[in-house]
Length: 123
Image: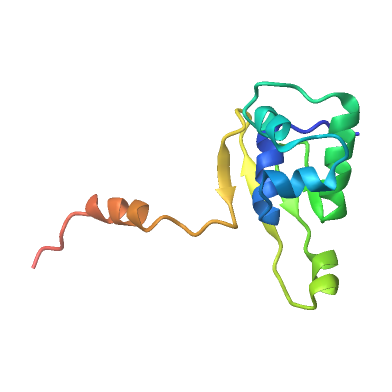
């Protein structure tokens, strides 16, 4: 069984667009406050809590990879929703920092900062 981290849990919720209560409603005996504490690294889950959480995410198409990647497989969701959706994923580095999140629009201010570094054309 795969033991997930708090950051992976938060990334999986983001991919599913779930809040803490949404996840807690799929679990037996785990309240939103405990999930939030887990995601912040303040508590560790018991083995049964981790098992239930992973099973709940997997049922919705989430996969946890050994390289800290969290992926949403939409093939099951496409059948359920009847729409064509590309897969979404979140990539975490070894420090569990989010490196890429395909569910978030790129920040326009970051693009403008990059443009500010380009010298004006001579002319």
